[in-house]
Length: 161
Image (cartoon, rainbow, N blue to C red; front, side, top):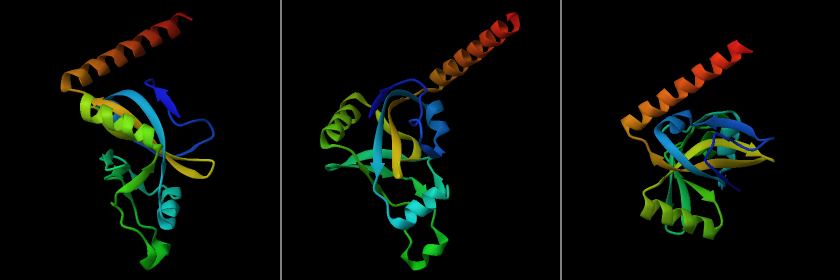
């Protein structure tokens, strides 16, 4: 499922576990892609408990696979010795054609694959990836200024009503 730009998040009926708000500030989001996550049992339980951090996570193409790197899913204590490594690379599930399309954009056009959110949809763990371009300091300031003017305009309109 692909979506273009905008502020849309995970689909309706999905239970959001974590969102990466910093990504929306640091990057210009061009396109969104939903991918499945290949997880172990203790990772799923930890994810359902909300023990996950996306702050510095990113996705990359390794060989024929798409991998989520630097995503911390904390250990699930009741799993004891059968648990998982919190910072391991996790395989993302996409069709090969989609992976190749993303690879081309990342390598040639200078985009970055940033995870925006992790959620459960119909019982399956999904990650919403964004094909994004990094913002400069000036771009960030301009985005903040635009947001402030939009807020003030909305306030003025609501006062007139």
